[in-house]
Image (cartoon, rainbow, N blue to C red; front, side):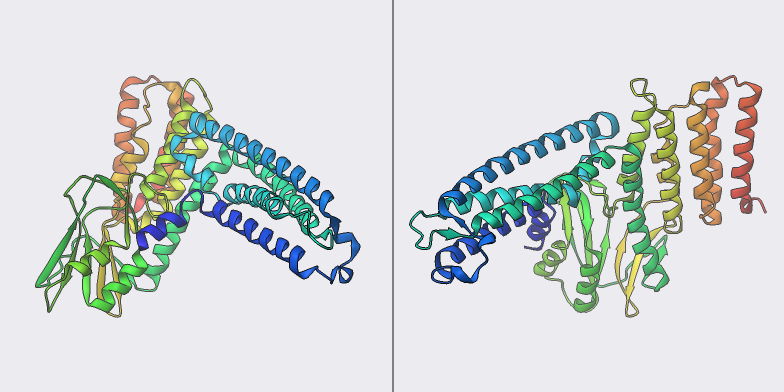
Length: 432
């Protein structure tokens, strides 16, 4: 049930469905007010808010047609934006637009307004005794609200279709995960460990039934469950990692008694295995989107080096924010008891994953190389001594092929030398 609740809540039609139900609810209230409340009391309502039944039917029919047309037009705009995202930015960035609350709220408002109008028409009766109803006026007010939302939506579309806005959104989403984990470290609830072997007498593992990604782990509820049941939970895969059938996902440990299958299944309720990855907790997936945007920008078809450099520098910002966490696995502690061990990425893996796709073989790639060095400098300034050593060694790997196959002008050599000195300063504690 927890898994179903999370799936429904994060589905594309959850918010539009709520607005549609709200529109139906308002329609039922309006009809009830017209049929029962206004009978004999219409003189208490200002004439400005009342219309005859015939006029109300005409108004509601017109509004229903107009709102359906605007809903169709909104769908067309969304499809154009999705095509732009897929062709120019990254296919993996599509959920960032579709799951945005502004997009879902816009669809919901129009669907709710249409359902109100069509439902009011369905229940409208020419035999209403007082021949005066309020439903038409309510429909007009709802339509005005829909138009205001539409103006806001056009402004939002104009902003969201800009690649810089998408890059900033992806970077901000990564920051939220980093801030949450860093705050837990400050509160001494989270420790970074390289090797932790739980010493418990009883254990039971949970295996993947189908090939899925480990897309989400409800850390908060898992820690509560572990503390209540006196268990320790060890995950064997990082969030975002792909697992095949019958592969071990996690193991539950307990000191003093055998573990029941029900407890293991209850633990599994707090994880999400899916065919799709999510940027909510998966830092490598967030970086992957930024990498794809940069690669598309450097392609001959688009040839937008400034977008590529902006995206690469934001990759450096993300790596810098996560640098304090890239030391080992995440070990959570509650009330002096270890409750959860979650594998995490390392600096070496993320550096290779982030920049290995950029093929630096010619002088035309020099500006991209400079942006990557800027990203390494940003990361190094927030990294530990050991990770600074990794960054410095990665610089040699990054420039080896470039130096072997590229003849540079004196100005190019000076540009690279300046970047190298800056990186040397950022990692100088390695050699002190």
